[in-house]
Image (tube, rainbow, N blue to C red):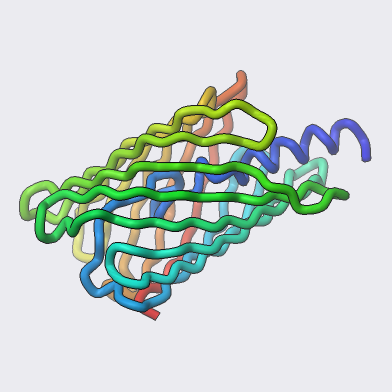
Length: 232
C-alpha cells in the first residue's frame, strides 16, 4: 500500500475514534438525563457525516435495561475522498447513571467505552478505552438541559489524554430542539451546533448539524445528518 494511503488510513481511523461518539443528537457529549420510560427498550441511531475530505456512515443500537443502565453497540465506516482510503470501527459502551434528573433536577453517571478499528489490509485491533463522567442539569421548568463531561481516553500504544466537553439543548419551537457542544481531546477540538425535529414525539427524530474540527495544524468543517428511533 502506498505511503499516502497509509497516512490517509491513519486519518480515517482517527476520525472514527470514540472521543466523537456521543449520545445523539450530540457528536461527542455523553448525557446524564435518565428517561423514566426507558425500561427494557431499544433505540437505534443512524448518521451520515462529512468532515473535510472524510465521509462516514454510522449506526448505533442501544439497549436500556432500565432508565439508568444501558449498553450500546456501534459500527462506523469512513472513506477519504480523493485517495479512496477506508477504515472501519466498532464500539461497545456501558453507561450507568446514579440518579434521576426528573426527581433531582440534575443527573450524573459513568460511561465506559471501547472501540476496535480496522484500516485497509489490516485486521481488527483494539483502539481506544474511554472513561467519561457525564453531568446534566435541568434549567428551570423550560425543559432545557446543560451537559458537561470530563474523562480520560487512551489509544493503543499511546499515553492517555484528558477529554472535556460542554453543551446544551433547548426546545425553540414545537418539536424542534436547538443543540450545541464543544469538546476537546488532546490537541483536537470539535464544535457542533444543529437542530433536531421530532417527527413523532419521543419516537422518531431527524437532526442536522454543522461541525468544525481543529487539531495538529489542520482545520476541517462539515455536517452531520442523523435519524433516530426510540422505545423499540
